[in-house]
Amino acid sequence: MATYVANKKEQNSEKSNEKASEKTNEAVAEKVISEKIIEKVERKSFQKRKFLFVSLDGLIGDIAWQVVREGHEVKYSISNPEDKEVAAGFVNMIDDWEKEVEWADVIVFDDVLGQGTKAKKLKDMGKLVIGGTPYTDKLEDDRTFGQEELKKYGISIVPYREFTSFDDAIKFVRDNPGRYVIKPSGEAQNIKGLLFVGEEPDGRDVIQVLGDYQKAWSHKIPVFQLQKRISGVEIAVGAFFNGKEFMQPICINFEHKKLFPGNLGPSTGEMGTSIFWSGPNKLFNLTLKKMEAKFAEEGYVGYMDLNCIVNNNGIYPLEFTARFGYPIVSIQQDSMITPIGEFLYSMAKGDTPTFKVKGGFHIGVRLVVPPFPFDDPEQFEVLSKDSVIFFKKPNTEGVHVEDVKLVNGEWLVTGSAGVVLVVCGSGQTMKQAQAQCYGRIKNILIPHMYYRTDIGDRWYEDSDRLHNWGYLREV
Image (cartoon, rainbow, N blue to C red):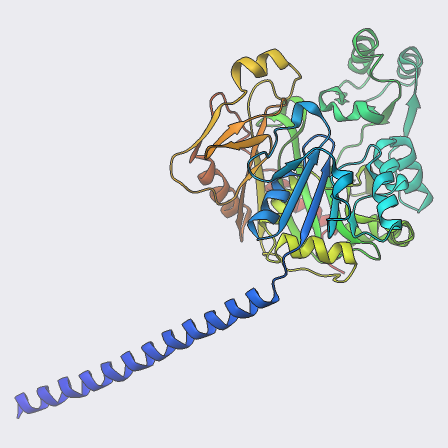
């Protein structure tokens, strides 16, 4: 009897396993069919487009490469002779972008410094263009104009004075002792090492630096600002603009500008950034949102970012970035679900005010080599030019190129600045994003490379204050 019951149980168990197996097989089959249908729909809905990227200094190469990887046609033009090789091998490089205007479905400009004038001319001709206007270029290129426009639209600004004479600036600090920030205007602001943040209450360190600049840099800094230094949290709010309105979600980001961990060393363009996507919040509504109608009037298409200092007394914008930011655009692309080619096309057409992104936090860390952040062509030639970028395992997920070229399957350092790669990571917490990013960096070897090991650490302290002040609350 016991044997019979046992056999019966085994038979029932076998039948149950068979049914379960059948259900599993059916589920797998349905999933495969479903995935094939989705793949077919995606393949059918995918439309190959022609993108023309126009750059002064080879900044947008990574995004051009990502567009290529999605299956689109790309042509990329760089003006600066020193950067002509940047992204070569990854994308199709051309010399004369103006000959390709008729060929292109979308034209992408990656900078200010007069690029807005070219972009506006092409927009007026009816082309789909991502780029600025003379007005939006001036917001970034002319610091004083940018500050005055903020004030015009009811946005609080940090007290500042503009100078064209170092002697006048030194006299001003002596007569008005305090902590100041020295900010070059125009093209000189691209030399990030010239920005100086004063520490001494009487301004003597600022006076010393102004004297040094007068001797060594007066020919390159015809105009500069002295901005009062304000304490608080440095935070930036940015959003893409489609010619009519700001697209959603917006991007909250934290730049890490000093060369060494712990925020030490000389200022650089950027050593890394942490971001998260958000709905409109108090920070956005009290700053960029106030200028939305003006940007629509201009027909601006692209990314607009405002770096600010905030404290419990208010929000104080420091400067505009009226273009894609670097390396933040690579971090943004890495954290988007919407394909970047589709996103750029939709933004240029002004069709889609929303796009899909991953939740959580995202960071990007720059891997650099000598002479960064300094300009030393001889040192670059000896230590860094044509160095091989070696991956211990053949995995480049989350790795984005900057001054890199592809030759016979090898990634080589090129350009002149020593800015090589941006490595990204994402996670539901900042710690998870950091772990993924720094885990990926361990897979990369470049001779003489260095990078910051603390990108994202600011969040642990800054977030408490920002939430306490209510600036990140979605409204």
